[in-house]
Amino acid sequence: MSEPLIRLESVSKSYGSGAEPAVKKLTLEVEKGEVLVLVGPSGCGKSTTLRLINRLIEPTSGKIFLNGEDVTDVDPSELRRKIGYVIQQVGLFPHRTIAENIATVPKLLGWDKDKIESRIDEMLELVSMDPETYRDRYPKELSGGQAQRVGVARALAADPDVLLMDEPFGAIDPITRDRLQNEFLRLQQELKKTIVFVTHDIDEAIKMGNRIAILREGSEIAQLDTPEAILSHPADEFVESFLGSGAILKGLTLKKVRDIDLHQVPTLTAPVARDQALQALQESPDQVAVLLDDKEQPTRWIDEKALNRTSQPIEKSGRPVTVNLQPEDTLQDALTTMLQSSVGMAVVTDRKGKYLGCCTIESLAKLIMSEG
Amino acid sequence: MSTISPNLSNRTPLSERLDLIVSPIFAVILGIIGTAVWLYSDIDSITEDILAPEKLQRQLGETLLLGFSSSILVILVAIPLGIVVTRKGFPRLKNFLVDTLGLAQALPAYGLIVIFFSFMGAGITTVIFALATFSLLPVLRNTIVGLEQVDKSVIDAGRGMGYTSRQILMKIELPLSVEVIIAGIRTAIVINVGMSALAFLVGGGGLGETINSGLKLDRGPAILIGAVMVAILALVFDFLSALAQKYLKPKGL
Image (cartoon, rainbow over all chains, first blue to last red; front, side, top):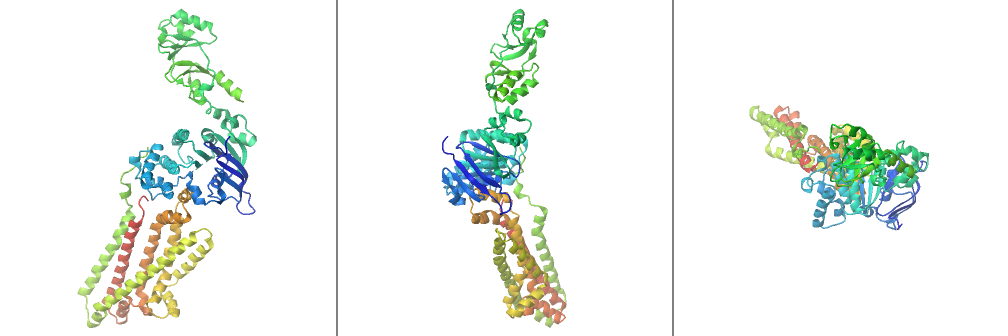
C-alpha cells in the first residue's frame, strides 16, 4: 500500500502524573480514502485519540503525521482548517444562518465571496437540502437530522482531505440515523475522503467502516482489521464479547446475495401442460418449481399438491411469489425474505425482474461456513 | 419532517415584551404624580427656592454625569475582567473576585461612599469610583455566567474548524453571551443612577441635594419631586438598556 495519509506514532496522552494515560503508546495508520472506525466501550480513549489528530488535545508524547508531515509543530488553528470535524452535538453556531455556518472554514481560508456563495449551495445540495429553503434559516429551526446534515456540509465546505467524525449520528433517532448513514456511505463513494469515525456502536462500525479498530482501555488496539475479518476471526475474548452474540447475523449485512451459489429449482414457463409440469417436478429432488411468465419473471410457486388440484389452471394454482431478491441485496435481506416465504426459499431476479435462481437456507449456511 | 413555524423569530415571550413596557409605564405614572404635586400643593418661597430651575438643571446634569461615568467605568473594568477570569487557568481568581465584590455589595452604598471619601476626599470622582465598585459585581457576575453558559459543543466545533482563541471569543462567546452581559449592565446602571442620590453627602451634587434640602427644611413637595426625578431617570435608563438588550442580541437565538 501507498504511504498512509494519517500516521500516529507511539502517541500517548496522560492527564496529570498519577493517572492512567487516556491514550497509551498508540500507533495507527489510516490509508488514503478509507473509513477507519474507532470503536470501543465508553472511556476507552477513542474520542481523545480522534482529537489528538487535529490537536484539539495535545499529545504528551509521540508523533502524528498528516500526509507525511509532522503536525505536532505546525500552527494548530491552521491545521484544523484543513481537517473536517463533525461532532455528536453538531455544534452549529446558533447566531449564524445555515449559509454562514457552512461558510465558516472557507471564510477563514479567505476564499472570495462568489466562490463561497456557490460553495454553500453546492454543499446544501450535496447533503440533500434545498438551498432556497434552508440558506437563511437559523439552526434552531432545524430538526436533529437536518442539523447534522448541515454539520457534515460545514465540515466538507473547504474540501478537506481528512474528515474526523466523533459519533456523528449518535444523538439521532434510529430511523433518521439509518438514512443518514446510507446517505453518508453514498457520499463517501463519490468523495473518497479519508475518514476517522468514532462510535461506541459496533453495528454502526460494521456498516460504516472499511476497517475497524476495536479499542480497549488506554486506546489500546484489541484488533484492527476489516469488518468481515473481525466478525469471522475475533482476536480475543474482549473482541468477541464486544461483538456480542449476534456476530454471524451482523456479518450478514456485509455480504450480498450475489456472493451465494444460487440453487436451481425446476422452472416452468407458462403456458405449460399439467403432466409436463408434474414430470419436471418428479424428476427433480426439489418439492417445488417456479412458474415463469412470458418475460421470464417468476409468478408462482408450484408443488404437486397444487398440480393435483385440477379445478384451476396452472397459472392460478400454487402460491404467488411476492418478494424478489436482487443480487445487490444483503444476506440479511435474503434471510428475512426466506423466513417469510412459504417455501423456505427466496427467488432471486435481476434488476428487470428476470429469474436468476433461488436462495436457500442451505446455500446461505454454506457461505457462512466457508468464511468461518 | 418537523414542522417549522415561519415567524419563529417574531414571537417573543411575554416576559420580554413586558420588559419594554413596565418601566415607561412607571415613569409616566411617577411623572403625573410629580406634576400633580407641583401644581396642586402649597409651594412657598422656600420650596420654590429649593426647586429653582437652574438648580434642578445642574443637579440633573450631575446625576446624569454620575450615572454615565460610573456605568462606563464598570463596563470598562468588569467585562475585560470577566473575560480574563473565564479563560483557562483562573478558577481561583474568579471565585476570589466574586466573593470579594459580593462583600462590597453587602456594604451599604452609603458606607462605601464614606470609605472612598476617607481616602479620596470630597468631589464627584469619589462618588463615581464608589458607585462603580458597588455595581461592579452584577456586570462581572453576568459576564462570567454569560460566557460560561455558551454551549461547549459550539466552542468545540469552532475550535475544531480552526478558529483561534481570539476568534472564538469575538465571534462565538461574546455574541452568544451579549444578552446576559447587558442584563448585568442594566442592573448596574439602575443602581448607579439610583445611588447617585447619595452623592451630595461627599459634595458630589446630584438630585440628592433637593431631597436633602426638602428633608432639612421640612418641605414635603420638594422631597417628593426630587425623589420622583431620580426614579424617572433610573426608569428611563432601564428602558434604554432593555432596548439595547433586545437589539444587540444576535438573531437566531
